[in-house]
Image (cartoon, rainbow, N blue to C red; front, side, top):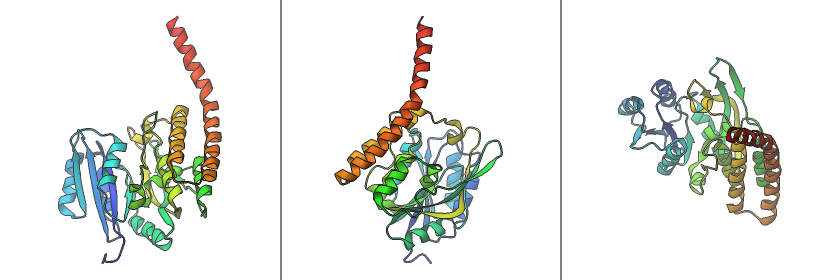
Length: 287
């Protein structure tokens, strides 16, 4: 029975995922939460990702598949999914990841138990290409109820903040702004401004169980992307713009911008030697 339960949509952006998406789809189909639908956007794949997803959709009415005629890239494909979302709650699912059967049920319960919360997320197990497994828990916001302190902790960019990007969030809060933003260096680390958006809007609740399993394989987006200092500086600027645009009291905004400025100064100091090395290389090539 799903009457009275919050509606949930799993948002699954997929691209050339035929080699591994079947297990992802199976884990979503096995969810114990009854009021769930799965919305998949296949981003102009050149393999049979769309066909595999449509095969599941033909046998399970909870699944809907959209084919994108032109390549969007992961962030615009994710935005398209979010634009289509009409449920009370949503979460993004990686096309190569798996979740425990009680994943949605546990996160919904956490949000229902705390009306002030806008996001709930679990701990994560990371499967690395070399076979190593590590468990990641984002604990920085545990028990943090005050908005400025939440935002400050996010701006300090602690360990494992990416766990929150796979969390369950209130759709209305996501639609109230632009949580997924590109920046000067593209779209890498876009999950950091995403978390800041929700931290400014309400409490973020951690469910202390490993319910999400992220698989990094050769060629996966996470494994193939190296996050350089220049990406971090670009994301710093993106977060600064978000703070300037946010509806915050002047004193609170000023303090948060000061925190971000200190974070950015650390990134710039780390970036400076790299820029100097690149400049010297260009001069040598020019000579």
